[in-house]
Image: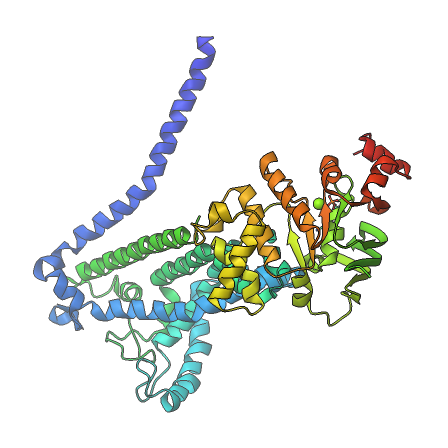
Length: 313
Length: 250
Ligand SMILES: Nc1ncnc2c1ncn2[C@@H]1O[C@H](COP(=O)(O)OP(=O)(O)O)[C@@H](O)[C@H]1O
Ligand SMILES: [Mg+2]
């Protein structure tokens, strides 16, 4: 009896231990990464205070001036523009797929949306250079110049080239849309059919039902979808680097060039290593990115929880 | 002419039969039970009456449903106005993701009632009719999902009554409830039957015995027999009805 149960017990124990170890390995990796980056950023932090580094606006590595603010602002600006463009469109697209499209349209559209998710970032970047940048430079910026000149952040300076926050935001919006659409659609599909039918049976139209019932019932999931998109956008590098212009300045409008943290790291790592502290500055940039993404993920979780609580679940 | 009359109505689901051509008039001011074994087409039949069947992919409806004398399958039918006339109570209580108050006020708001005092009156009145007011009057603004299933079903009843329908369509409204809650819902239906035309789908013979004034018996997609409850139960004409009522087929 004992002899038969013993090996099984051992198996059980070792499986539990392995799973336990593995479930700690991944978070540990993140912690290790943060520690490594911190250690490598120490040299620059020894010479400059963190506050100075984060709030100064000049970036002249040769002169030993490392102001990170332009990069932080650039990262946030591109991400915000991307989210403002993509969130409403993607949510409506998800709503269409979940509740309005016929089954044929859906079977046609879904693979197309999934296909978007599989396209490499560099292709989006090329698309940005070939289509989005010229469109911004030639049409959108001149339009904004003559019609929106009184709106802060929307009025371009003279001679906008198109390599801008807006172009970066538009390319990112496109890139991130399949993720937002599919997560949002899942949230909408999860609403019981009966709840929608209850609304319809009271005489509500389809749109009223979507607006008052579906969007409300799926709200936690929809917020989650947008937030997921948000954190993907923050870390995206390749496509954005190709179209934002990469100028280390504090942008005054979305038609100005910017320089996101990811682009800074990708453009410079491996070059100019002879400049003192440059290497350490890039490590700090990586650490900043990690912290910003972690912060947004955390805030996002809190937001989803709060929404879920309000929705009464 | 009664509120609800059906002419040569049939439904197929991508070629498969939902129910076969049926002609019947539903008597007003009483409870008409639609009985028959599971899968015989009762729900499909009910969903045709307020055109909720439109929302089922693959369903094809032929024939006419006359609500107050007008064929609701005529093109150009105002679905919102139609559905306002027919309240629905489904198998599982389907509360909307909002407060108890807003659930009841949902329909009236959709149909244009905005004044707070008026809405307050409607909510109170219909919750009283549904026998729920005493239990919830001090927490009207809490999420409806926090109610028990039985309370949720009575809330759904109040919500349906709030748009002042003429007809109540009930699809096994007590199937997911415990006996006590079922009893509550049954009592409400009996109280309401003098004012409404009630169509009650049920696969529970006992419930049909307790509540029905008129009975439609469906079997394998066919309306086999109809008649006043006491006649149909005590003296069924068709053999299949006799077997079903006796409990030898199900
Ligand atoms: N959405 C649907 N798609 C395909 N077939 C369906 C659908 N709904 C019901 N049916 C079929 O139609 C027939 C009648 O079903 P239903 O009206 O739900 O019966 P009941 O309510 O009496 O149990 C059954 O054979 C069922 O399989
Ligand atoms: Mg059914």
